[in-house]
Length: 234
Image (cartoon, one colour):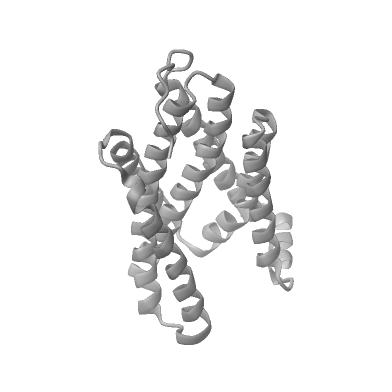
């Protein structure tokens, strides 16, 4: 993956991870705040409903998000930190549509419980990924394969089985997959620090990509916990 570089004095690893987690939680806060705003203002709420009724609206949003991630990655590679950061915030803003649906579909108590649970789980797995001496990277292929299999089974269940039990199993599987990915990603970006510790610009660029990946880990953990709690209260 990444090889260690002895030059690690320009930017401490604590500052590096502080930037990653600070930007990540800014993204989470932006998504949640905009999502709540979209459902709180009647005009915006109707606009969201109208958009979601459009054919392929979800696919349009998904395509936009994929395009943004590709663009962010390109700018990370060229070390355009400012543009990468702006694109990350734009990406976070698009997730507000998902949050608006969450605020409409679930009771606020359940949302808070899911958020607290997600924060606790994410924090615990981040600590494990940061402190463990074992190479979690050897499980990355397994985690990615499990993620793909889970997505395929989800689509099959949506269009064929339509089983609430299968959906619940998928939620638990998805939760465990993203828990594993959280630990893996933290370790990966810790190794990335040692690889380019002498180059602060490279570290700042990688920090943006780290914020995006950990943002996605956190959001998915939160959504799966929310779905599990929601079904337990049905």
